[in-house]
Length: 167
Image 1 (cartoon, rainbow, N blue to C red):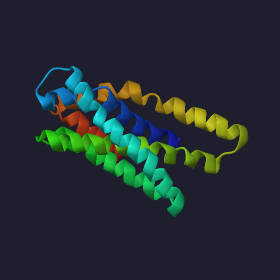
Image 2 (image 1 turned 60 degrees about the vertical axis):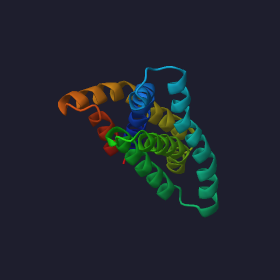
Image 3 (image 1 turned 120 degrees about the vertical axis):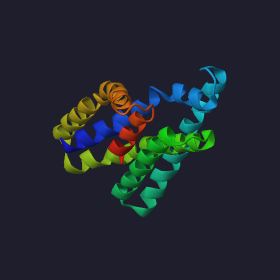
């Protein structure tokens, strides 16, 4: 259940960023959603691709997946929060790159944890349970973001909440 809760928090952050990324990019570019926004919104995912390729290889050489996963999630949490709080578009884009890279690259590490403790049918059932419960993050994220923004009367409040929950 603890792994389900951890992965739920990761998924909330993932969906909290994915659902609103084009709107967020359009806001800091000062334009409407279109080709330019789409191209800029692709940059965080390209960064995530590079980090997800590099970091697990590095972790395999050095060992210790847990510190890597924790570091990546802290980077993701800070990136999410800064992307909502910063006013400079370049800083916001860099923060979104950190957020996407952190929570995408942390996921391969996460999935090593259940298989360390479970084997056979228990591993299959445990992984299914973790993934099923964490899937609720996609449902919770938009509601939580909207609630935080209304409660604090701030458009960045939802991102700060996701940042705190990820870290």
